[in-house]
Length: 248
Image (cartoon, rainbow, N blue to C red; front, side):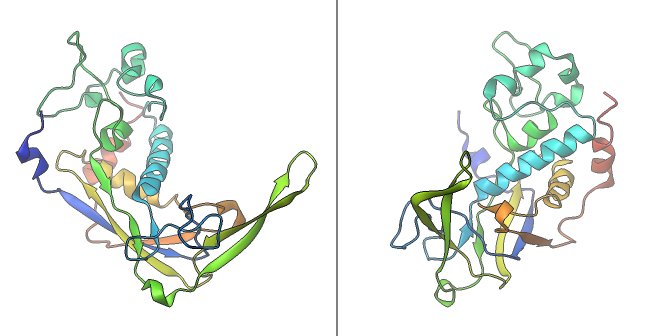
């Protein structure tokens, strides 16, 4: 049942992010939109460049999983549902922790009455049985689109077996301008029932995300993060909880 009071609830807090792109950015749209590029860059409705929130959220989850495992917390294997919470909690004793039982208005349980257990990451980012407790905005470029020229980067498909370029396989990538440090802004919204440790884990994960988009190994999409230090303060109790991973 969908309750109106749940839809109208205000978010507890949000983290305002700014990504400064240190190199050209390549976030492909997959289909042509009037550009000569085989892979045009994603744009908002008003033409401004953007980085999809889904891409940032996926990278955040990956980095948060690594950090949580490094702290000794048992974490499920995403994105395959069979290896994720709450299924793994039925067979693995490491997931039998009291803080893996989610406290919500409606207690999460299986059909036979057994309590569902969700790891730290699933309690933040969700899984097939639990909705996400954060909302990640698209990061939108703060520079007007009419001031940015179209940049096409040529490439060629390589035959890895013969170690040569394939015949008639030239393609064009559309990227942002090089070395102009374009600012991309957005927010990460934490829902009211989001765990207290979520902000600490997300901020730590952002320090491990150095590039977004395609062709990162070729030097595209490298960036630097900035955010409001006052709005991103974390309770010391959250850090103490994260450090208890090896002590069930």
